[in-house]
Length: 249
Ligand code: 13P
Image 1: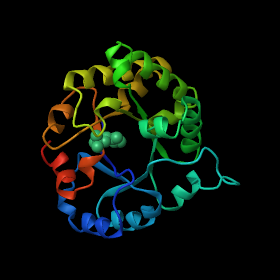
Image 2: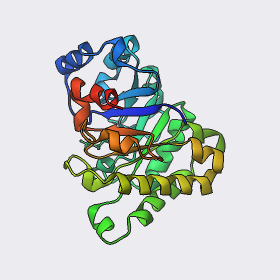
Image 3: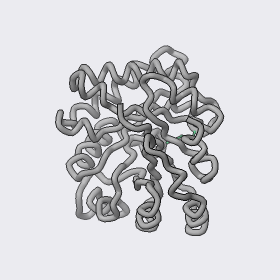
């Protein structure tokens, strides 16, 4: 299996001076061979972080993009614009986009397709709400999200796809999923991808866990067989917390 993938999702946080302070706290020796580190920043800072990230081995990611390449889409950002700033990854289908901005499975699938066709690596977020888990419907919900996306991914593109399991009830709440719940869902995701795309693709697929990941719980989660990294919100805003996520592995 490939490297551990640690992705920071800054959401709508940070500013010019906190970004400088964040990057100043990193040194080349903070990075290790077996860990790939990505920061997904707000659009206006992508150019800045692309320059700063180049000097230390952090890769650049965005948090969303348009499902079109160019044209009359006021307020939107094209995948080609993201590529212009050396953006390698893009988070798609985050639960905040699904819930607050009402993005559907179909729209997210379209975005996945255009991201892949534009040379970006989508990080597709899937996960259930608390009521769905309480009703025993978490696998059904995740299956629906995976199925819609899988229809837009061709077999030769799967190696560029990352899937993040983010149970909505664990995001920003301090309530982390137990390692066994996170592992069970990650295993389920891998099994479904095996059905969609075959054994080899499923075995090599990178599956992240997201939802209240912190230095105190990361090790247990990363030891799970089917979890290959983390998608981190709050703990990625502070350089010391963020680097300690892989420093302890
Ligand atoms: P927190 O780590 O703050 O719970 O956020 C998780 C998340 O939504 C990452 O995309």
